[in-house]
Image 1 (cartoon, rainbow, N blue to C red):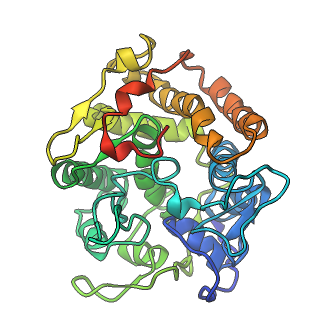
Image 2 (image 1 turned 180 degrees about the vertical axis):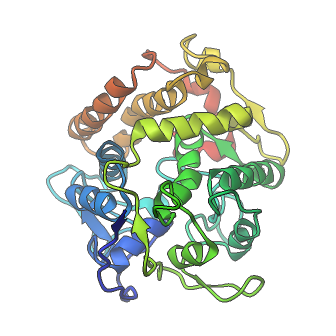
Length: 368
């Protein structure tokens, strides 16, 4: 097992950016990426691999995705818009928004510790706070019955079921999108165990206890009186990352995704509430994909993640059209990263996707 060579932890400064991903916040606090919260593609790839044992294929895709949709093609913010912007030769039409403002693109409804886009709604704004940790959600996660490896995938999948049903029953604009619902949402849960668990000879796949969970999520205090210090996430002392040679790759993630979906097929139900709670309506996957997939085939092999990634590819031109004066360069960069992923997964190839079915869901803003 490899012990994380922890850099000195520092609390973020006044202008340092922190956002919805506790792992990225911790990396910035320990200077594995710049402490200001804005990093380049290579810095993200090197940092996530070194600190957490993320596979290079997974880190490269996620990093390029962030740079294209939330940054300036070279770097992006783990929080909100960087001070002064990142305008330059990349042809940006406006200021990069960072992942705190990328709901339905990089972030999703049904987060373990963050709210849905329309879940915690302030009367003065149209959408709610979807990037800060919600104490009551962390408390519910912490209270979950532990699995054989602590807060492992059995515990986190059960908690995901609760969060999914809570969104359906309480958020009139809950949206489970083809990319964010099928791929991003399971990552929000599986990454907790796969990247935060403490690895040892006794627990080669990792054991995640409450103290480590609290540290990485910036929580102090005791159950019932937890305190959240926004942006102060830290890597625990005496913590061992995934073993070298056992990096968490996209095929590994695809397996975790499918195992959860086989047990709970609602995870792959693309659709949403239609303006009132408990009005969840699913789209016809056969019509959405022009017959390439159906509900049954999504559960086979790597089909679910291939479907999700290819939807992202189909939606990219429309999303980028509002971000760049010319979409040629960002599309080429995104497609270049995606082609490598899809070729390794070997799933069915989609033609055009009928995204018009998704427009009836009021919570789908920004998804396509």
